Image 1 (tube, one colour):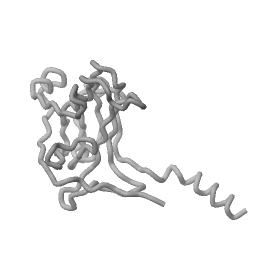
Image 2: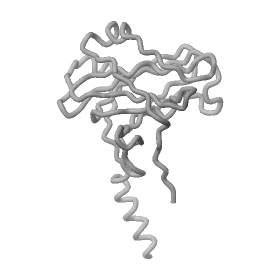
Image 3: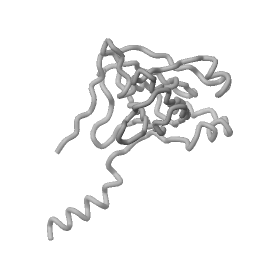
Length: 181
């Protein structure tokens, strides 16, 4: 009986776990139609995913990118097993696919788990408060690698002049969160 009660309680409070203070827009067009300026304590992040080469995830057939909030001071992803701020986007792994995603986020720094360059440095994106920020377009290349395109003309032509191209910095290899029983 005690086990049953614990099971019921854990199911009832399960909504309290895995909290994320990132809110996705259904599409960047939803954001663009409203053209709302984010409040001073928030920011809007836009990034794209595209597939230019074959062979991404032969089993799942999806190309995905995860952006996690990052602490410059601690040099690690923020949060823990139950609470973290992260963005996730995915597209079908079909050559020629391109899609943009937008998120309402807490300002700060964000890093992609999947984006490591040859020198084992991670690219961290700065997301200032009260701004709309474009990170770039993550591309699955024909060399079976993830690349990043950061063309300022794309920002201006597609998203308008009030969108900021994110400042970046390289940091040592990112320390993640390890959760286990």
